[in-house]
Structures are given as C-alpha cells and as structure tokens.
Length: 494
Image 1 (cartoon, rainbow, N blue to C red):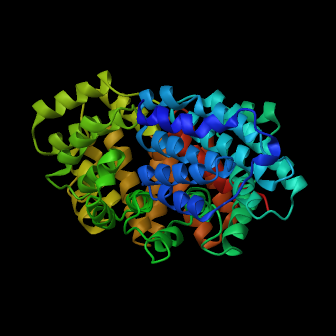
Image 2 (spheres, rainbow, N blue to C red):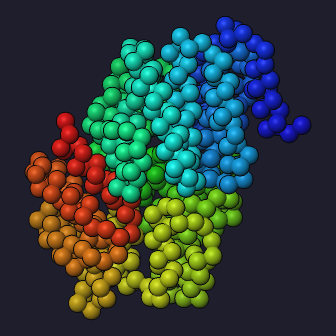
Image 3 (spheres, rainbow, N blue to C red):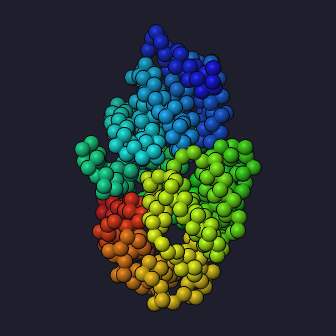
C-alpha cells in the first residue's frame, strides 16, 4: 500500500457507523504542532503529527481539517496537474467527514468554510475560475451563517475579512460571477476585520499564522502598504529561519518591493534545508532575483526550476527571462532558442505568461540599455538603472522601447522621491501608450494614483486609478486592474 493510500485510508476509515456525538473538533497540542509544520512547508512532519493525532483520537475532526493543508499547500506551491488529479477528490471526502461533526460547535461550519476557501485558491491556480467561484461562494455562505450563529467566535474574522476584501476587488471580467452569487465586499472593511483578529489574539491562537500571511498580501496589493509590509516581513516578528513558507513570502515581497539583495540572502539561507528541493518555485524566485542584479548565474536557477517543476505556471515567463538573459550576453542563438520554447511550453493563465507569449510572437528584442534599466530598477539599483537610460536617446527608439523608457524614468524618479519629475514621465507614457497593448500607460496611471494617495491628494488619486481602469486590452490587465480597483475601493468606501 502506498504512503498516500495508507494516509487516506487512515483519515477516512473511522467515518463509518460512528455516532455524531463521538466526533469532536479539538485543537490539541499535536494539532497545533502539525499546523505550525504545515505553515512552514514541512508537509511531511505535518502529516506525521496528524497521523499521531488520529491514532490517539480517531474521531477528532480537527485533524481532518488540518490534513487539507498538505494538499492545498503542495498544489498552490507546485501546481503539478498530476497531484491535482490525484488529490482533487479529497475536498469532497473531507467535507462529508466534517458533516458528521456537531453542528452546535463553532468549528463545524468554520472548518468546512476553510476547506472550501483553500480549494477555491487551488482552483484559481489551475485556471478553473468558475469552479473556484462556486467553491468560494460555499465558503462565503458558511462563514456568514457561522458569524450569525457564533458572533463572538474569533476565527470567524479570518475568512470573513479575507472574503470581503477579495470580493471588493473582483476584476471586471469576473463581475458577472459576483453579481449572480450576490457577493459584495469592501477592501477597507475586510482588511480591518482581519487586522482585528490579529491584533486581539496571542501568537498561539489557532490559525493566526496564515491570517498574518494573508494580511501581508492584502495590505501589500490592496492597500499599497508596500514599505510597511516590507518592514514587517524583514523583522523578527516574521522569522524565516527553518520556515520555508515565510522564506518564500519574504523573498516574493522583496522582489516585488525592489529588494533583490534581500531576496537572494533569504533564499540562500533557505537552500540549506532539505525541504527546499521539494518546491521548485523557490528556484524561480531566486533566479528572478539574480537576473535583477544581472548576475551570470541566473540561468542556473531557471534551468533547475524547469527541470524539477511539473506544472504550467511561469514556464513561459521563465523561458522569456532566459531569452532576455542571453540576449544581453550577445548570444542570439541561445536567446532565439529560448524564445521558441515559450511558444511550445507552459500555459497562459498568469499575466506574466501571457506577456511572455506575446514577446515570443514578435520578432524584435528590447533596446539593450532600456532592458538593463528595467532589470536593475526592478532590483532596486536605481542609480545604475538611470545611468543606462541616460545612454539611450528616446527619439531613436521604437514605440515600445520609447514607452518603456519614459515609464522607467518615471518609476526611478518615483522611487527616488523626485515626484515632479516622476509625474512628467508618467504623463508622457500615458499620452503615448493609452491605446497600446503594452502595459506601461496603465501602470503609469496606477503609480500616479499611488503617489497622489501618499501625498494625501485623494481626489487626484481616484482619478488616476479610474484612468488606469479605463485602459483595456493591455498586458498584465488582471493584476493592474485589481490594484487600481482596490485603490478606488479604499478611497471611496469607508
């Protein structure tokens, strides 16, 4: 009998002919330790502790709920379709088993809602958006009911806050789903609810760890609290030692916050763990950070990612990064080889992969100086990036490179707190690129909104966010629209 078959058999074998009164939702010390291991991506030890709990207390449904973290974290991090096919049925099996519990317990609906919520995220990961919406709705309705029945149950605030914030930023192309299901939300209220749980509970409170991680991403992307979140994940309150999940989160936010050095340091430390090899996405992040520093060893990590990864996310983007690396090295043979691989591999679910596909269908490469400035500025090396841009003459560039030139100038001056110069370049980008497929104009409007918001010029911020949303058909549409919509939401809904 395989390990997975044995574990599944153990998990579900006690569900037959047992009176509901024998089932319980007990968050024991074994359960707590299992949760901590799952939330550090030590899935093997998490499973081991769940087995111990089920052996000691066969009818503890909290162990059933916790076992779901093994499936969902593995699928979210690795995205392997084979794992998805093998594990997808576990959601319904666990829901059926949880239904044998006591409905008078506040954990009864909460655990079901948690499983539905986690699997909604998994379905999105695999491009099953309608399936994700229906699963999300089940979680949403269960949490509304649990909140009505047990208004003082602290953990209600975790999923209630998450759901309200997420619904508040549903992209326009999915609004019809929210309308059909009657879902309404608010970014401000949702994040305030989640914050209330975190701020009023101790570190040992059940399920607080994931509330903190969700809160980081919500504040980062929906409230644009980039500096605050970066400071938090860089502090002792967010330990990365022996915690692979926290290491991933910190490195991911570091890259998005233009701290390539910190991302490299974090993942170099994580590589010392045996668990590192189980999650190829960490090599993708590490390769991305090295590329932003224009390091010669960046391809090593990308090739390791492609060799070990069995999913479809960021595959096209990885081949694009390899193509651009070799283009900068002057090796057009390899650059063109990897460019062709974009067309043959991966999926187009992620915005980055969609953009990579469009790159592959074109014939030209970016201007060398503009491309180096892009990478260096995204890594946080602003002065070096500015030196490369100053070597380029925008009047001699094609329209795509010209748009990126003006946008990069705006972003660099934005980061250097020279707002007046930044606005000038952003406005030039918007004027030239409003109706083009490149994302630079929409991104410029988004960044101007964030700048005005920081300055307290809220009416101008809203106009910039709305201008961003008015631009259609550009690269990274979903990502940019979600951030712009979150800006409008948080400034107009109190």
